[in-house]
Length: 156
Image 1 (cartoon, helix red, strand yellow):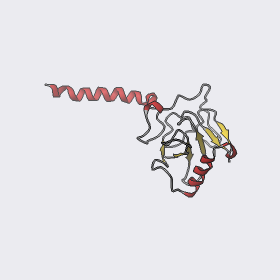
Image 2: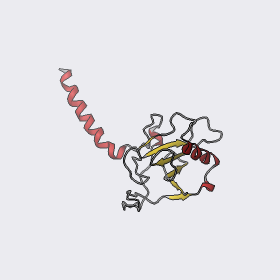
Image 3: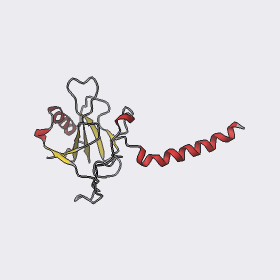
């Protein structure tokens, strides 16, 4: 008799969890190391859904940062991206889903995330560069120093 209830319970739980996935899943990457405690925040207030000049949907105003304003480690990460590696961490180059829509919207697979080393840190730290488009190109890259909670477009 207990087996009769297993399947309906699974269906109900799947429906409940599936309904939560739109707003509940704010994790920025497919990497398994990302924790729920580090999940991204909602887009900034006043965000608009107007199309950007490139045709991509722009969901919020992003600040910019120049190469000179980036930490030296970020410049090294950009160099590695252009060279196609080798990267210091196996997680570098993984798919970045942009599920919080903090970056311009593009099809799945467009963005990839790379670690920016943090001096003195014993782990990967919170700094990342996320680049869109074909690999080895850095003309559509964004920098975050707060583990995907906010981004600044890297100006060419």
